[in-house]
Length: 321
Image (cartoon, rainbow, N blue to C red; front, side):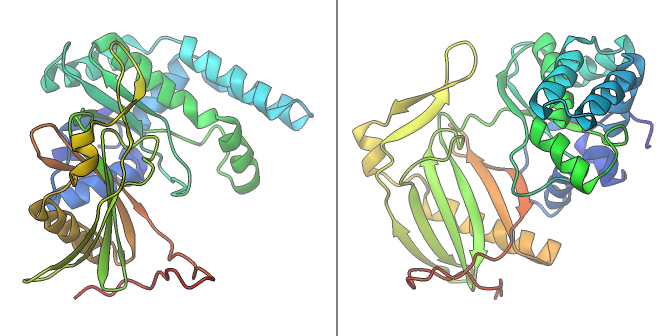
């Protein structure tokens, strides 16, 4: 299985997370627990290695890293490597496998998101995400962009300090159907003490919305829910052709809670499942599409928050009922 360059979620459970990426492995594990995850496929670490080998990028990486170690600026070195990645064509066989998997999702006209799924992510770092793609060539270009993101200037500096070797590093990529949260909402869920804290705003979750709705939920047979309606003055939506834009919310959106009681209970239940499954506090990123369906789009480890000195809040070890 480790030689597979494209795998589907139903296959991913039998593959080492080093091939599909830790983030995607986490999503796959929770999908098997019954949590809704967008349909998609993974372009594996083996695919990244094939691309680097066939495009002759190994010598480019080695040469630029030698220049960095000799004193050249890390931004210039990292930029030169990323440019080489983005200009190199994918091997025809690999490109064909990616396009075949995209066709299974619906092909041209089907909106997808392309995300990095690093083999060893730093949960406090944001990885490359390319949204609102709807053609095969765009998906291929986004895969190269995610491969190239392995050589951001910060990533290069971190590997110099922590390892692994630059030529040993890999970058799996996940391609998923877009959740139209620009027509719905998005946010996070995380457990603190015996409560689950949920943040919600209209539109896309990037960048994080100011003054979102906030909910505190005690999960269980008779859940207790405390709601705070945020101002939600703006939201991020897709631009007409590519990218995103921020627009004012409508008065009705500012006056309305993003989530129903059923949504709140479902997200709280997902948080309980994630914390128990991974045996540590997790933070979930979720999205709600225009039809009202909820999806989990990312799950990451969360270190307990420090006590806030003014006593306003304190995050404790998760103890779920």
